Image (cartoon, rainbow, N blue to C red; front, side, top):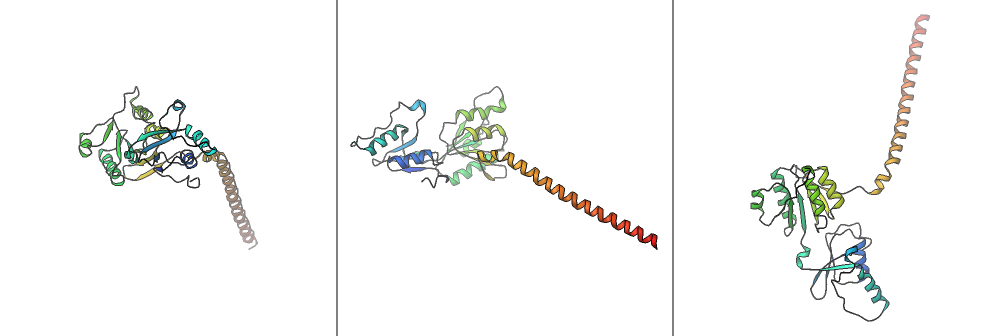
Length: 258
């Protein structure tokens, strides 16, 4: 599992609370939703505890014999929070963000494409434009109206912060407006996609930290390369000019002798 940590799975389903795959799934895997399906056909959502979850008790594990393995398992489960769910936990949750720049037809096409790829997905649309035609075509659609904001331009981005703890699997933007884009990339715990007006799909993610560390060395290397190219061209031009001057001088000298 540690070797597969760079692969992006939508779900990881565990069949026991064996501590090593459990910790590996929650700490190292990029999957946002880890699920337990136990021997009693119960579904549980797993996540690491926050500070305010320290004293919550949501799952009581049956007591087992005294052994080092069981002690380590209890210690490991202390940092894990289990929440009871049903089979709908495996249903994808998608948030479509309409900031007012997308045409109505683009929104319709994006939702239709989502339903084709994920037929059971729960789709929510964050928009301050309510379209009766949209609700008529998709009766199961959830429309989220952002709260008022002093600066209307930041209405959508401000409400994205309120939705950051929701378990969305995908956040879909319909334009590259900077405020919802930055809020989605920085705060949403989901895959961020762009569906533009040409119905092209793009995956969006922040640049790795290593790219920023290489900015200065790349800049210095670019300057050095440009200086070398400039000096080479300067030498070539000087050599051509020197040869031309020598030929002119030679021609003038031969003309005088004649």
